[in-house]
Length: 573
Image (cartoon, rainbow, N blue to C red; front, side, top):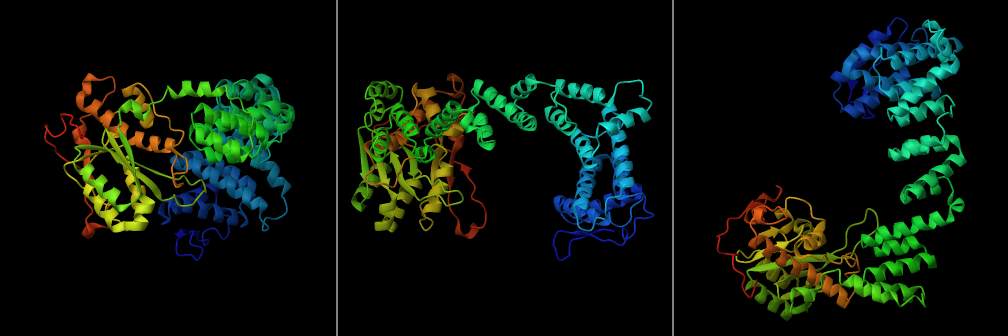
């Protein structure tokens, strides 16, 4: 017997010559051959398991003695001696028996075989509970289910083992389930309660599972107990402000009308989560035209200082008469974020034609340090390709250029390629980015025929300089400069023309702030700052595309720099 990967189905199959007649094949021999088949099979582990499961359920029709159900219980009693194979094979033979029961080839139910298997399975259950047979709880529960072991069978098994003077099967199970609950094995406890139709733990059982964050077990138990328990579960989630879990239960079990206020609160919370991730378009879609939710979304946009979105929503949905007093609150919120004026940036230049591109290149080539970033319109369609990178921000501490890549590429792709190559491949200019490997990858995907995005020199990714995560660029800015960045426009429409003034400021700020963070790193040795950093020069990387080795993955290499190159600030850094 062995696995034959050359079979037409391509999944690997079990040769049947050893199992064509199981009349004289003992469970031990059967399991031994099963193990050998698994060990020597040439398929991958998962496919071998599937092939074996498929064939085992078929050979159960070949007269195993004294019957297929009893034969499998004998196998389950023997499997623990097979060591590491025991648990996996136990799941295999149980699932194979299930499939056998459902298959058209299964003969009419043999009452004697079923009764014998049920009795043996009950005794196996007691052995597992007592610890004399080592199985995990999932195998134990599946054994009870597949052999339909009920309370009567447990009573009989206890009696057979000389436990007639002890408690009944019901009392025995209640005691065991109570121990499972104490040990926080909630899913096993719930499965047993459901299987034996017990309901003794009471309302506090739900609270225990929720407190321990075993939400799957809590919902399984509440579903078994019925609608009142499901309502209790929703109330429990609501009281703990676990709105996502509450909404999922309400939606799945059609309880929205029972909890209208909580349902609305859940929807508001979902909108707030999306707004915090700057997914405004998705949030608007989720509102589904509900005026109350749209007004809340407007409030979130006002709170975030996203004025364009406020105007856009109010105009689109005719939301008139919203309280103007909130604008004072917005002004207060704005003071909590960094602004371009705070960094003394003198000029932001929009570049969408060749002369402007050449002037920008000339200026940037004279800078010792520049900040880089780029933006593109988000695409929320699952499985679809990302949109092209729309703009690229490059600048010094005093002047930021925002390049309209889409237009420049369409109008003068060769000049764009040349100019950006001069900047990105310049050895004398240090380029600063934040997670810029992601940006450069997206740029290469967007403009695959341009060479400028396939090679770069002297690039320092600021996030690699800090040993601990800092909450993105905004979090890092707050830790170093004392105030964070407003990221509400991160996922706005970067393909619209013209960009709004707020979009331009957002884009410019992301590039400019990198230079100020770099100055902090440069001027503070690693152990002289509250933020633990590493030697920044060791993280300067370069990548030069080599057509002859295009099949290999690009590698970054450290670039040695002289100590004097970036030590002193200059007017163009």
